[in-house]
Image 1 (tube, rainbow, N blue to C red):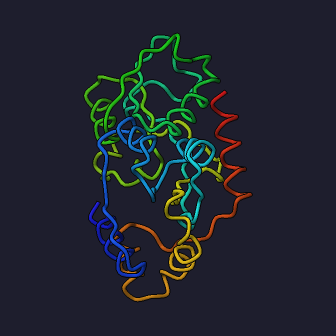
Image 2 (image 1 turned 120 degrees about the horizontal axis):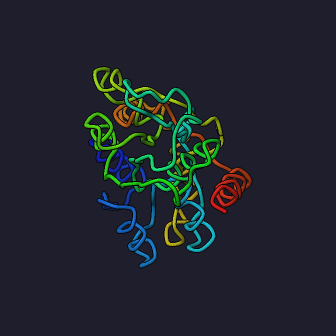
Length: 233
């Protein structure tokens, strides 16, 4: 999280305006603030991007280069389940409130004829807690953002096993600008795309776990939103 505070400071200095960084404890709280018009710039998951762009008038300005939102379906290492098809009705699922990861995860359970009607699921606040539920025997299967799973310690990952990983490749988080800040859209786009060429900017990106930003066109935004809308039907 510290990287986002550095990024906020970098933005203020380069845009020449005050920006308050707000971190939310839940997706629901964040969406309440969005609908109340209290957010001008947001790093949004692809699921929320649909609502932000089509209902709230936000515009995607940039996306992290080389980073995509893929989901993985995971079981404990000692599980007898060798493939998704081995999962049975009544399986206990550990998931999070991350809507795109949960949606993709549920799609990957379809080969086992599983859906919300024949499994029990519990929502956890973080992927660390999903991992703990699996390791404690409180869940049979769990959904992770692939990046979130990869960032777990080797000790924890070694006690779990990935059954399947999505390969959608065009679903990702994006930085979106609200209507009240869109007069600075071009400035912000230029700053972000060139951020990795600046010594201080490159350092901030590293602290965020990113290599650089790349511009995101209207066409790319609409394609991703259409795909997410199709997946959630």
